[in-house]
Amino acid sequence: MIIKNIILLSLLLFSSNLIADVVTLDVNPNRPIVGETFQLVFKIKTSDSDEPYISFDRGTADVIGKSDRGVSINTTIINGKFSTTRTLTHVYELVASRPGPLRISNIKVEIGGKEYKVKSKTINILREAVRAKDFFLQAEPSKTEVYVGEGIDVRYYLYTKVPIVSQEVKVFPKLDKFIKRFHMINREQTTTVEYMGEIYKKSLKYSARIYPEKVGRAFIDPLKLRVQYSSSNRNTPFGAFGLRMREYKTRSIQSKKIEILVNPIPTENLPSDFTGLVGDHDFDFTLNKSKYLVNEVVEAKLNVTGPGALENYAAPKVYTHPSLEEFDTKAEFSEVSKVLGKKSFDYTFLARDRFSLPQREISLSIFDPNSKTFVTKKLSLPSLSVEGGIVKPNSGGHSEKKKETLNTSDDNRGVVGLVAPSFVGGFTLKKINLLKWTNLFLGFVLLILIVIPFKKYLLMKLEKSEIELAVIDIKKNGMNYHRLYAVLSLLPVDSENGSIQDRLERSELSKSAKAYFIKSLESCELGDFSGINGKKQNMGKVDSKHFSELIKIVRGNPVEANRES
Image 1: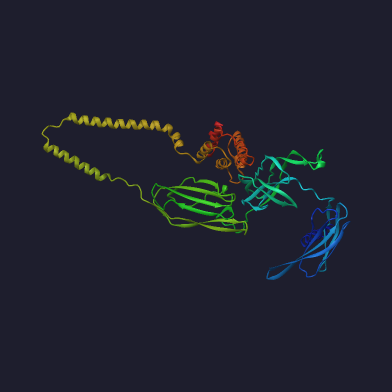
Image 2: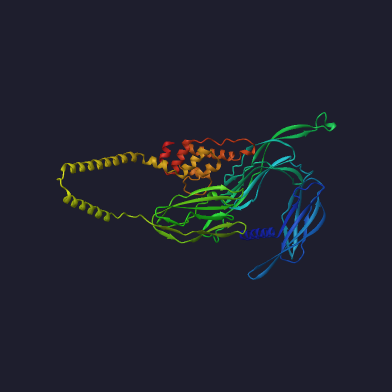
């Protein structure tokens, strides 16, 4: 008995899923009004050539018409066999006589000798049309389903039918699960649009380009505004004469949270040279010259331009050779437009010995979200040749020549000399040479004793690391989101995944430093978009103590940094 019930339940579930795939029912509009026409739209997908028969219980509504909206045909080939599917659209027009819930039940569709049951539908009939709002905020993303790392343009618009006297941003969207590029709105532009049958003034209030960093569901946070608006009041002593008094009111509004579905990059046919970039990108590589000498610095540059999340893109390997020493590659990101970004990599090498590398090409693949395929880009690397070397002085010939000169002098002195040699003069010469070399030796020892204690200090002063140069730039030009983001992205972590806040939490910084940098990052996010209200947001002051700790962590001295903090 139990097995029989399980089989019946399975058949019921299977049949309900089959029905859902065969027949669909929609209501247009979804909130009808008493006395106005609304439609029941049936879409039937079938491989039969027969016409369907539709029946249902209309409740208290009246059916006033029926029409066929045509047929769409889809033909596919499966295992060499043709399969044709037709999609039929039938529309019933109804009118409700009273407000409240209207239940459409006992819905059946018969076609090809088969009967399909459709789930009952309850429709809420309104007494009168819902009055449109005087103003509202709405976030409008360019896409709601993307791949991880694919760019989304999100814009927050204010729709209004009444005059707005003033406005103030109360809460900016955090967008924590995204890489963010904020767009500056230099001048507010207002357009007139029709929205849901009403005429509105539409103005852009906030804009950003964002990139989801993790697979799954992500949410576009709301933007909150506080607006002051004017409304007319007819309830005045002069209302009968057509005169209205203006009232000024204040209200807080916010946009709705929007869900974004983030899909993973397909693993099927995933190339080994995949860069992780989504969208079309251009790669441009330049080398200063093709021929170098031993111990000469070799410099090259790679520019990557495109719509992808270049902030997380790491420099690819270009030249490799046992005699070519590679130093840290300097990276710099900049925005070309509201959609395109550019990341420049400055390569620095040192040629230790002679070698030659021929011209060659390397492959770099990107993912095209439109065609859902991987596209391979070819990057041409010029030939590289290192020549020359260290020339050792030939001291042998010089010694022999010196020896010959000495011998000749001795011979000449033996023949020409009329006065006996003076031993006092020879002793004085040796004494003077001994004093000279002694002084040179003592001076050299003294120089070493002076330089060694200050060696580390001098090296730190003469060789500024990337983190120190970035911090100096912040102290000199002020702190903004991009400068602070570039500094914090240098923090060493066990994984490159996650947002910059995640990198901070996983770093070896002290709690006070973490709190300071997280707060400063949030302040910079607001400050980068300070022009929205014409006010200057607080960007946060530069705390030298915390930045010094950050420099030591990045340079690999966490113990010393924690001791000082």
